Image (cartoon, rainbow, N blue to C red):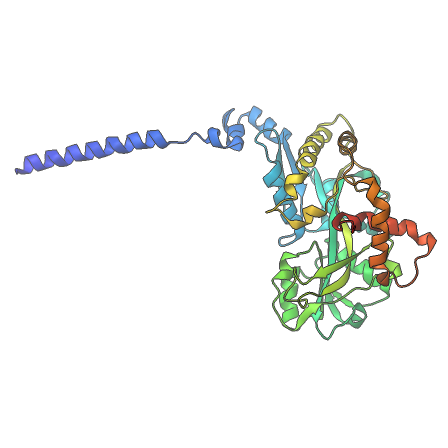
Length: 391
């Protein structure tokens, strides 16, 4: 075979291969807009066009969540996954810096529509004189779930009283743990030396003996707390003292959630505080008000999907019609509930209330007085969401 013929064969082979490659690419090329509603919304009107910008901003709701490793971040990510719907609605979850900072962000940070805060944060800000009538500036979409107080300490610490004068980390001073921890210790008359350290760093310092305890207020299972494997540490119980009962609920931490910190089959008594999906109290007929109303319709309509795996188990505690004393619900949220009915059967209430009283009698530290029943009933309304009727 001559060199000329060999070169001709190679050229023909390359041409054939090239044409085949081009043909294959043409057959398998995917139009982004055919598989992604988000891309369709962005590129339908051309890059950088004013129409695209207006549409993206008009249909995006920005939610201030919480710090890395906390429950709020996971809740925000779940809302993004379930509610994002191309150009109709986009949820933008922002990593925050805790409940106190979220209150400020909802009030003052441009573009933030709503956020997750704890129910005791606004009361704390008012009682300490930082704000007046702050609840009037807010509206709530729904009470989300209860967040349990986790106190991690060496096994030599048997109760909160043992932390008198000890060095205790209560997270950064712009978070909800900071607020709840200070309130609880004040009401119990216990005086630790507080350290303000981000929780992941605090757990490392606790393991090295540089701290006597770390407090984290998060929905169980708390991701950071489940990762603790030091056999010298455990979760410290919190008694449901009378001074705590006006703002906090009885709760228990389980060995299923914390096998490294609680012996198998045992429970650790603690308290919990509700987390709230809150928004600025926008005037009706404003664009921000309409944007929140669109969010409510999507969110409430898909609550059943959020309460299934693989989403955070705390979603299963959410009862959309749960009320929050002292708060005003966002009107479109209340109207949605009125149209779709309540989620709790009225016929079960008395039976379940008696069950609640029976199971929590020991923790209530004595006989239940008639004047206490109203406060206990509000606690029961939270407790009953996660406890089925015993028949």
